[in-house]
Image 1 (tube, rainbow, N blue to C red):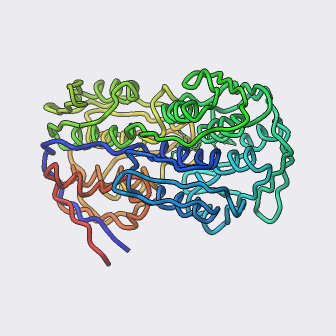
Image 2 (tube, rainbow, N blue to C red):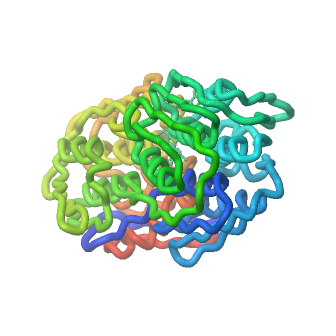
Length: 417
Ligand code: EPZ
């Protein structure tokens, strides 16, 4: 088990380079199932979920190797069409192999991902879409068993713009017979990045990034070399890190056009954020102000930045009302922030944060990926020492966050216990 020990109070200074997006890398890796040959995925972040997806693809019969941030995936055809529970339960995004396996091989057996700390995380919309495309789906002993002679085009409407649901069905539809139309599709940049990659593999996808995506099925796709987009959530996390410590940093390789809602909201609190030739210059030179927040599907403010924003509001001037509309249990960081002296009350899916002068360092426990980031951010601002336990949650979604923060002057140490 590892912990992070943070001594707060140091304004961050210097420059940091943003890694590739975890949530673009995982679907890109799954998409290599769609075509035999050697695929190269660049700008891959070195973090646990990527390693887990690599292990899953190898379990299916592919070969994955990493040279720094370049991943080479060799697909000589799958020898196994089952994604087992012991792998899927460690990473829900494993569900992304369902669509491509079914489209390419007509069979797939994938463990139901089950819930996680932040919510029940159902996949009913993924399955509804595949059934509309002609798949026969059975749920048996915790597994999804799907078969289809050949998937056909369909008109699919999502009650909720599910990100991995959109990605799964885009991949399934790329090899189906006929045209598939997904309405109320997720518009996240990671969905658009996947569509770009697949179109260069020979797919015919239009409308990605909008609410209606049209996929014209083709008979086969070709292997590809693709570089994934930078991680907008990591970028937002560093903007908050500069804000919460009163720092002045330069964030390299960020893609500001993916962060409109994040940057706009954080500027409203008083954080200065300006585009430079290399990315973003972020400064916080005055007392930050409280602002309300409501998480929304893209292009709204992302749920994956809610916990980090809440940490910032803990020491802002005034009161912030934060509404989480995407997941039913994404306030696990609140109890831990309160151990550090934060003044937060929860009413259903709304948290009210009254800013305090200072947070106080304390031993706290990470519960999920973004909650962990929130506790690290609070520790950077708190008086005294904060010890964040169970940081394997953090390592799932951030590449060397502690090292990057240390390079910006943070007093942060990773200790093994
Ligand atoms: C993706 O998860 C991201 N993960 C999540 O990031 C992110 O929080 C989420 O999108 C929302 O932006 C990856 O891309 C790998 P959803 P996903 O399906 O696709 C409901 C992180 O921190 N829903 O868009 O699983 C669901 O319960 C992770 O990096 C159904 O009801 O999320 C939720 O309330 C956490 N039925 C809402 O939709 C379904 O079939 C949005 O979920 C699917 C989803």
